[in-house]
Length: 226
Image 1 (cartoon, rainbow, N blue to C red):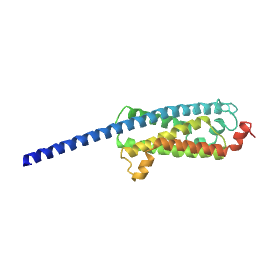
Image 2 (image 1 turned 90 degrees about the horizontal axis):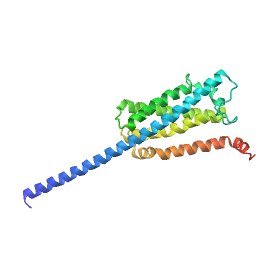
Image 3 (image 1 turned 90 degrees about the vertical axis):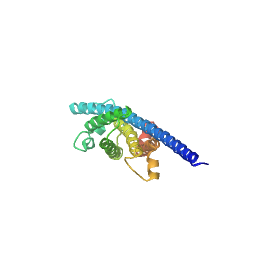
Image 4 (image 1 turned 45 degrees about the vertical axis):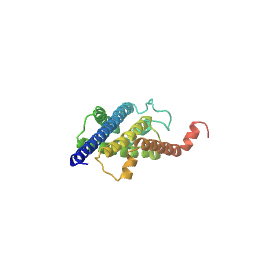
C-alpha cells in the first residue's frame, strides 16, 4: 500500500471516529436534556402540590387561631387530625410557621422546576442552592414526621401530602446533581443515588411501615378489629 493510500485510510478512520464521537456526544446531550426536563417536571408538580397543601394548612391555622374549638375538614378523628398537629410547638420549630416556609419554598422550587422543564440552563449557584434547599426540606420533613408519629401521636393529612412530594423532589434533585457532574461521587454510590424512583418508592414503603407499626393498636380499633 502506498503512502498516499495509508494516509487516506488514516484520514478516513479519523473522520469515522470523529463522527462516532459526535454522535455519542449528541446522545449524551439529548439524554441530559431529557433528564433535566423530567427533574423539572417533578419539581414543578411537587412544588404546586406542596404549595397547595401549605396553603390549606395556613388557612386551617388561621381558623384555629380565631376559634380554637373549630373543627377542620382534615380533622377526621384524634389520630388523623391537622388541628392536633398544627397547634404544637413543632409547627413553628424554626421560629417561623412551617406553612410560611412551605409557601415560600415550594413556590421557589416550582419556579426552578418550570425553568428546567423549559430547557433553561441554570447557573451553578442555582443548582447548588436547589440541592441545598431540597436537602434542608427532606431533613425538616423527617424531623416533623418523627415528631408527629412518636411525640404528637397524630397524623396530619396535609402534612403527609407535603412529606409525599418532598421525597421525590429531593431524590430527583440529588440524582440530577450527580448526573450533571456537579456532585462527583464514587461510581457505586453515584449509580445507586441515580435511581431516584426506586429510592422514592423505598422511602414511601419505610414511612408506611413505620406508621403502621407505631399506630397498630389505633388502626385495629379504627377498623373494628380490636
